[in-house]
Length: 501
Image 1 (cartoon, rainbow, N blue to C red):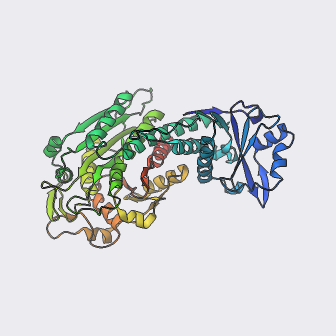
Image 2 (cartoon, one colour; image 1 turned 30 degrees about the vertical axis):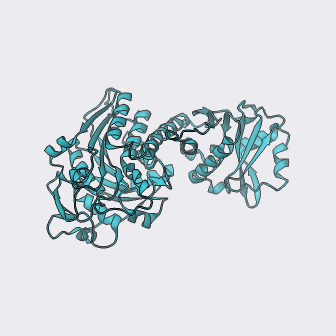
Image 3 (cartoon, rainbow, N blue to C red; image 1 turned 135 degrees about the vertical axis):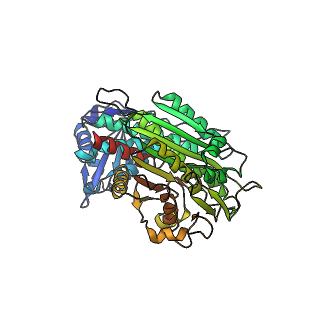
């Protein structure tokens, strides 16, 4: 799919197959956007005459397709309802854009001129452009690698998005980059566990590094991790025949005053849980919906997708991305409840439940990343079912040892429609991790599972400005990966670059 900018203020002259314009409903009165008004004028009032019939209410995502309207060059005009104009925001843009995509895919339309961003305020238009690209790309996404009979590809090939703001092209480029990062994340997560193994993630990361001159990669094998004392990580991977991998990518995007690569700038670290299949180990999960445990590497997939988006945007920033990839299986070699292991940090851990394995691979990754002296550390993981109980599938959880960092992540999520909500941490919750025989238990003794999991990770991040994203409810819906939290993290990094210039 190609996305292009269209700065034409006269949609009647657009020569694409279809022009898409917004109609609002304020106080039971239909209000035409500027583009819709231009079409109405060019057609000698045809648009208003149709609307005056009263069938179209302009409710959010309501649609009406018009054909061969005189005075308008495009053969089709698609009217999209957007509700009240004063409530028009990126969430509505996302919903209307996806509805538009579904309508267009049922036709033979090859290209459209899209004026859906026009209803946004001037300061919101760049974000609206970015969100429009993400929404269309999200709806058009397909993974058909495993189908013997492929579905027909959509006829739609090109989308021209209206934007006259001076930042419109940058916003378009950011939308394209984020959507490509999301696609990589979704592809990785949607592949089955017999394909997407820790080795497969390492191979995918290698391909990404080969695609960009300013991305370096190193892969730690289990023998390397043993030498480093990563007993916590290895306690998870040893139950599987698939070898675990610790994958480290460095993106050098920062520039010095002369425009040269600045490797000395402190990086932001992104750490992702990459459990490519989670049976629960000896603490075996129920069989129902266990197929969805292929998504338990969503944190690692999201971090790799975010790196791709940043590299595509050529963000002026340094990153270190650590993917803790392992498979959690029951076997004669697997960890048993009650086993005690020693982490790279030297903290001993009593494995009270082998299904709380994500924090066991992450804690060694969070310790290892310290060698890069990061300015900020953010981890993402499909860590706890308790997060789904608390926040459902719409909002991910943020837990942090730094108020400003938590606020910045939540703000970025609100901007890009990838929302997050902060949960508390503290000594009262940390007490639940007490073990009779080791420094920590790997589960808490009671409720607040999302919080106690973050408190566990917090024991390994005391030296950092750190935040944890629990994406258990947002990384996939039903049987399909979502590509989150790539938008949130990409927007956070964009904001960080803009704030530090």
